Amino acid sequence: MSDDSTRPIVIKRVRRSAGAGHGGGAWKIAYADFVTAMMAFFLLMWLLGSTAKGDLQGIADFFQNPLMLANAGGSGVGDATSIIQGGGEDLTRSSGQVREGDTEAQRRRLSMREKRLEFERRERQSLENLKQRIEKLIDDSPQLLQFKNQLLLDITTEGLRIQIVDEQNRPMFDLASDTLKPYTREILRQIGTLLNEVPNRLSLAGHTDAAQFMGGARGFSNWELSANRANASRRELVAGGMDDNRVLRVEGLAASVLFDPNDPLNPVNRRISIIVLNKRTEMGILENGPAYEELYEDEETASTQPTQPASSNPQ
Image (cartoon, rainbow, N blue to C red):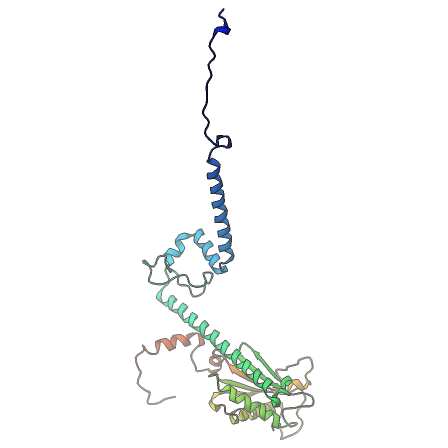
């Protein structure tokens, strides 16, 4: 057996680099990756919070089908393969968008529909402005302000409706007559001046309550009375400066359209209704006019159609 005490002792020295006890520099790379990921995350959250809803939907649609926008054409995407611009300010809008494969007639109909919708929007805004002007006229005029409760204005499917209604102690006309009270004349004349500010045509209707008309000639009833009152109102609007050619329809409706159907004898049912017509209603009244949906197409193609000789026997 060898003697272990005589074996030489070997000492091995291991050189350690500075910072080796802390895992070297790998943690710095991991930390930098973490900070970069957090910065990207907060940047994404900020972008999502400042992006419009329509843009978000468009982004979502793009990731679901990236080729859809490229095939349809759009700003910065697919412009080289399509002369028709796709997309738009509102990526969620489906009406008016041109799709690949649409015929020229379909694209034209979409274009006409877009023009019609834009015209209706501008027309409604014009009627809203007129409504505000009349309301301001009433508030600024001491003569009209006292009759404010008798002047009702609202926007309907037919256009701007201006209703002048009776009150218990303040009727618009003499009893059972179409003679206007002096203050009613003043109201109609001032309204007539403002109505010249818009090109729309007008419809006037006279209304009575359900009380039976007892006086006058034989056969004279609330129907004739309401028609006469509507026509008397038309004359005062013209006296106020309104063009008489703007009036498209004057009618008497008697008690067929009550303002207060729960109380047919309520004085508020006796009223004059003036409607500043929108284009859709105007075209519906004109029986011989073009269909409303074809109006814009007719206007666009009028210049391209050959001129027809005038008929020697016009109807």
